Amino acid sequence: MAADDRTTVVVITHDRRAELLRTLDRLAQLPEAPPVIVTDNASTDGTADAVARLHPEVRLLRPGRNLGAVGRNLAVRHVRTPYIAFCDDDSWWGPGSLARAADLLDEHPRLAAVTARIVVEPHGTEDPVVQELRDSPLPGPHWLPGPALGSFLAAATVMRADAFRAAGGFSPRLWLGGEEELLATDLATQGWWLAYVAEMTAHHQPSKARDPTLRRTHGIRNTLWYTWLRRPVPVALRRTLHLVRTVPRDRASVRAFGEALAGLPWVVRERRTVPAEVEARLRLLDGVQRRSTARRYVG
Image (cartoon, rainbow, N blue to C red; front, top):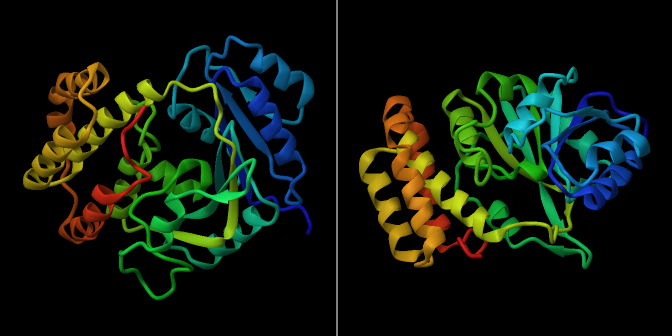
């Protein structure tokens, strides 16, 4: 396979030097030879210096603070290719997947993003969320290269750069944790489509350097904010009550609801309910999300 200059890989990282270096090694071996941009979110473990020394071909951004998912927005400012392949510091793309994604985005001008099959390493098992992607209940146009999706997983998605920019990228308010849902909904509102493509592969070897409790707090908070930003009031009420009934009853959950409530003024100010046709699609996913074993707030 020849090198492919249509896609730039964007990686965000924070205090995961070993995992990031493994990811960069894997990306450097891809036949597509994609350019790579890394945003180092104020790591304190020597990550940035190690990247500069061992991978001088990588464009390294050092904003000096932890931007969370917005580190991707910063990287996209430097992207000159038509497509962006998002990647976490503990994940990497399979050979040929970036070329396949670019072919599909070339072929379908209203397709904003394609999400890959996710393989969990080191055992090579399929991530449980893949079944939800494969069995998505959303109807879509006949030309879609796979099941239509209502959202995406950033570490396994290739996106059209112009669509990302037009939708505003990832929200600085949400920071990190389920940040994809808001962007995906705004893309749908602008008339874009998202699809799952099984012949693409993204590998994920979950880092042990993570705070699952903080991740849960942000996930609950961001779910509440997203719901009240974009969904009709009855739907938002039902989803809020469902979270109240089902999340763990501990300080982390109380903190999540407290942070969500503290954000109410800006949520009301920035609230834009989605069009009826987009809401109809989102409602088809509500039941799937409630039953999901891959989306439970634990930790």
